[in-house]
Image (cartoon, rainbow, N blue to C red; front, side, top):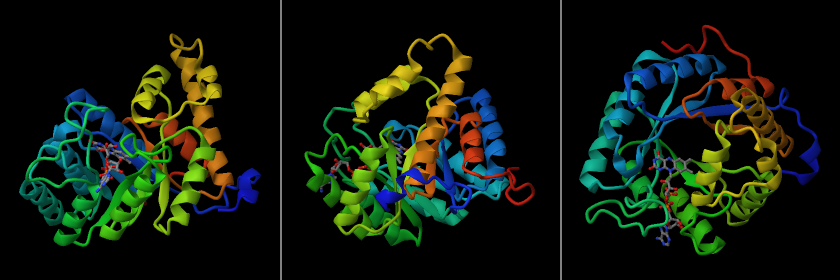
Length: 302
Ligand code: FAD
């Protein structure tokens, strides 16, 4: 990445790749919303779509069912998130084996958050994988999966310093991770600094920025605080006074996310992972600005 490229966005010329993250639905109504979003976003031809795994391992079945349905009913490539939380190695291995057997070839391997919530000490299951690096090794031993892992442009809250953070990412890469997807962030300078640190540490896998369009600023700000993502003052200002004005909030959110993504394109970034929150509209608009156009007939859901 060349800092001199900073002010030369060229989205339509760059080979932009996008991927989308969804969460497994809890109810029939949520299922319908999810599938409407998948159908809207599928023609943009993402390189993959991922499905999250609930905190504490709470969505094992629902994640599996959603991934299996994507595989069955669309031409999209699903990636199943999997964590080490509250399960023995044997149980986790059985899930991995099952994914392999039904044809899933991409897993997003995560440790997961402490069962008692963010901020509490993480206690591995006595017979479980201790961390994401261990899980990556376990997945590799079962099948030749594409494995994504998490990375943190502002450090994971449990990493005491950058040495610990980068050593951990390196362990995940050495175990077999092929790509890292980042925690969401809003300050592109911090991401660029992170990328420099990662490359200086000899880590060469793609680091894909995780982008979160802001549907609800209050919620995003509160979650950011817990996971250590900083909120630039300008971002807070942009959403000030809009709590009861959904229509304007949406327009502002689209503008904010587009500005962030186009700035990253200007810095030489061409891969983006979008946290969709199962909503298609903002993400579809941003993809349009990135020059991505629906490829009807090529990549259709259902
Ligand atoms: P790890 O890489 O194992 O690291 C966790 C912490 O432990 C780090 O601070 C690391 O430095 C430290 N550490 C690990 N091993 C060692 C060691 N040997 N020595 C010293 N320190 C060590 N959570 C979910 O529950 N479900 C999801 O679907 C989900 N999807 C996510 C997707 C993305 C892209 C991201 C960024 C996060 C996601 N998360 C998800 C959240 C994630 O589970 C938490 O951030 C969790 O706290 C850490 O997971 P990890 O895989 O980064 O853990």
